[in-house]
Length: 132
Image 1: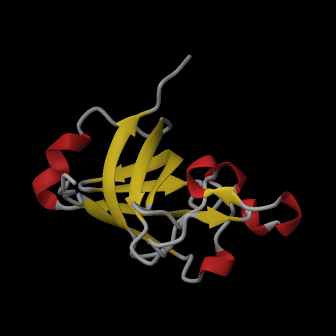
Image 2: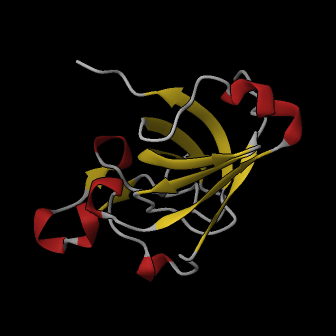
């Protein structure tokens, strides 16, 4: 098995501190917070502007990594599904993806809205949202 190394580029600061308080998905959230990008990666923010939507990948450091079947959205009436067929945060590589609106930029910090991620979660990457 090949190993991969992931370098976290920053950390999320927000008001969601418990899993039970997190919206089920970014498109259901009006929560706001700050993406603090570590200074050595700040140059990578050039070109991001307030008002745009970005795609952010997070490392869900508090998620279980040994569960392979879940009830989608915790709804037992839907039956068990493999984690790869869901958006569950529990998975072998707990990577989350969120589309966040950039509200403001201050040096190496992006103020964003649409959060569904816990405070203190490491940021893996940021990408431009593809417009179709």
